[in-house]
Image 1 (cartoon, rainbow, N blue to C red):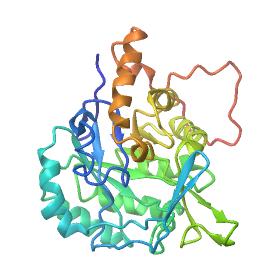
Image 2: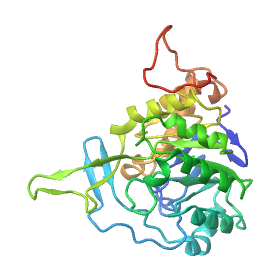
Image 3: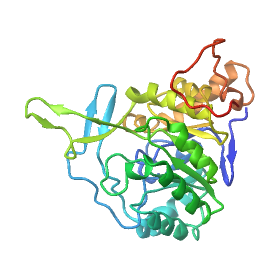
Amino acid sequence: MNTAFHVGSLHLKNRVLVASGTFGYGNEASRFTDVNSLGGIVTKSVSLLPRQGNAPPRIAETASGMLNSIGLANVGLDIFITDKLPFLRKLRTSIIVNIAASSIDEYCEILERLEDEEGIEAYEINISCPNVKDGGLNFGTKREMTATITRELRKRTNRTLIIKLTPNITHISEFAMACEEEGADAVSLINTIVGMAVDVTTRRPKLSTITGGLSGPAIKPVALAKVFETYRTVKIPIIGIGGIMNWEDAMEFLLVGASVVQVGTANFRDPDAAAKIVDGMKTYCEQEGVNDIQEFVGALRIPKNASAPGFVQTHQK
């Protein structure tokens, strides 16, 4: 059974990653699941300086999902290198470092400093966080800014470069095209959707920042549509994210065009969720008599003459 995937310097033994911000730096979850069974870990976002994040309350449960306004709280680059990376290097799984910044210069500085560190196979560039004031969606909702960040980072690394895109735009495929044109190896989508929740007793927002990022099963239909749109537009691989709770959800993402998936909100409910999804996908392939999981990527059976209104399409695979 071939479940592996390769793009650039990134070599995954299977198609399941854990999403940034939902699995810490790996050591937090290692007591509850076999971290080495995963295809890879996408670290919690790393910024140049430590960030305390937004004031509480910054998490609210919603119907079939959750809102978060963590604000990219993290230990900062120096502590990540000295305290977190040594543990990650010991793991028998691929490490992808998620980078967040408030300027192009900061993105470049973080990446350049990480270039000297061993144990990193790829970078995921977060240009799409909806709950930070500095940067955040400002980068991910402007096509030229997305192109510029990709171009500048591509100059500085031969490691696999992944750009994480926001769904809070009209045509996500246009931004994926910009990433492809500027040398990105892959795109990951989607990040959370802007949402809010209200407490009718206090008549106040449930988050200190009023709005936050919606994740979980509620956003899966949106994520599937965005992946499908992007797959019909670019040739670089897509990493699908959004509401993946079990192996069936993961296979849906492969069928619409994702080569790899990331498990996010499910990790909060069950730290072993991603490992179970790995097993479930393999069992499904065996039951279907398929020896290479790649056969499912983009294998959606679309009725003849069916159309998807509103999608931008420049080439069909």
